[in-house]
Image (cartoon, rainbow, N blue to C red; front, top):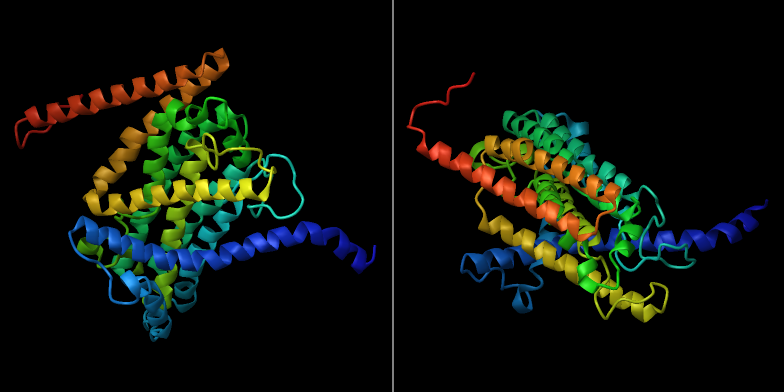
Length: 393
């Protein structure tokens, strides 16, 4: 087969992928810049301040000014660092964060193959959900490598904390999603979204039938972003700047951009897995019906994602930071047992072919049981005399 024949055969399949990749590469830096602006405005509202309002109307050009300032900063490399790995670490964090976006649809995508442009880089992957989690978890290597390569004890402590945190919260994160996979019967993200588009409207969304899985997933995913109240890897009161203590200028921005990319990723996954994706009552039609329906579905999806991003930003400025023992106790004593019990409950309901509302009863029962158990533990701790430890066999 000649080169021209190969080009004729593969070009219709190649150009939609190249367009989708270009869209991601162009949008991530812009989203990162304006996410910082939005978060500063939200922080100002929470703390009764004005926030950035000097550059441009309503301060809208502040993000552009910050970007120019960062690129013009002198790139200082400390003499005591391992230079190659020091420079490689932020690149790994950002590359893995951006690569995870390739498996997520950012607009309506049919479960059937479609020629032409598709609002996803890699459509039709039967293990798309698994690949997304596998790639996004690799960002931990960037943080660990950056902390070690900085040759600084504070950076190393932050990297070790981050390693323990990633390992711990990956377990309930994966287990919480398995219940959704069991119900949908697939790890294909487009299929999972399609399974929520029922005649019941919003009652077909997984949030109503597996609320416990949503809580576990969202908490674990938030912990993996290293943001408050889970930012033990970089808490300034204990570790100066944590794993990025020795980073400045554009190198620090790469870490920062990776963090915001993770925030966008978990927001997309929360909506796609539990809130019906691009579906909404009265606005959902066939994916390939028309460009108008595709555009409308993309607007619905992005609106939902923006609401989750704002919620994550509000949590940062509303909740205090955990202690590290509380952070580890939350996952090993709380989230992992609950995720395991929830998965067992979903498996029993699916095997016995009980009605779908049985899933909601199982989740509510486990939530109430966990609340009663934690309350009894807290009361026992408050009744215990100060200075005395419980007697163990």
